[in-house]
Length: 407
Image (cartoon, rainbow, N blue to C red; front, side, top):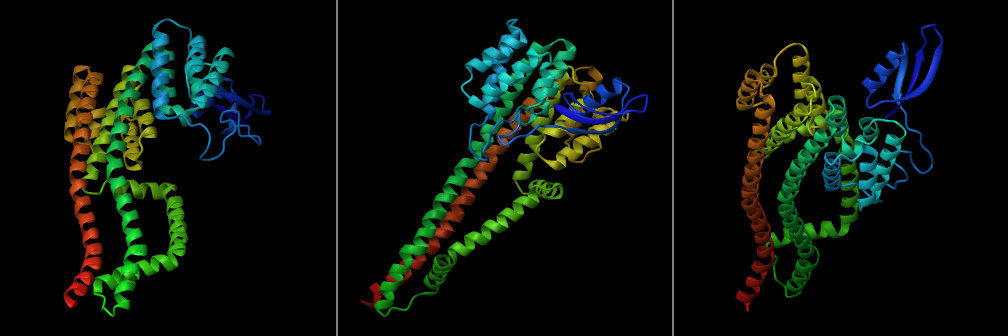
């Protein structure tokens, strides 16, 4: 990343400039090594009409995108090349040549250019944390510092494979109920707006009295037909407003807190967090990342502000001298098995192995929780659909039955 700074020289002269660094802390360290007193420091990205050097020309919601699976494949390829003794520059050039994603090809070539100009791999990749993530660049940095870069890429490939597998399972679990619900709503709206009003008109022409349920359905259809566009506009405005609120820190925190209070799903969210927490810590500790830094990085990549705050508290406690198990023990959200297993890992000096075992355990727990959630969603959907279909059938069949009995 490129940082713009204002500072004061030892002789009191004010200076301005730019410096490359993997993070803001690293930029501060570089400037302090130059004996500069920092006045201001901010991320700098030169922009023009067509975007910026790191993002290129982009139209919102359009253009090539880099999917998670693309990063998984890239990581596996680069790990194989490093293990084969291929140089960093040649490895990135080769993968860029072979990748089918044009956006990833462009970024890998830019990283190759940075490496060729003398920048480290971690600094080069940190420019694209929006794609690879801070976890990725910090793992690479740890590999560079320990001299085990090939192992770091291998750990990353394995980690991303596991994470991608978990993400796919979560997506598959949500596809079925969403598809069924949307299909039912479309059919129901079509019946209410088009079918039932025509049938009701025919009955009224015959002088038949419409039952209450049919009148209610007709009322809903009339409102939808006459004010549908207005309802859609108001709904869109309200949705946009709520979306903006959800993007604020307080809004995200409220939503994340609410997620952890939904029956059934709160168990699933918690187990997903525990699975990723143990997996992240295992991967980073195995690669030589210090425990405090590992906790800080994990807090940055956890997609829940409640758990993010929890990890920040734990990292501060560990930094203050407490053990990881004791810090975990003081957090009510964390289960006792995690605390006890972490304590055993610390006492035996096999914390990485224990975390790996816990990661496998929680992965199985997540799969079980997903199956349980699906098992509960299906009957709930059936009850919901049966209720909707029952109302529609009643609105149609009751007046028809009246016609038949009156003949």
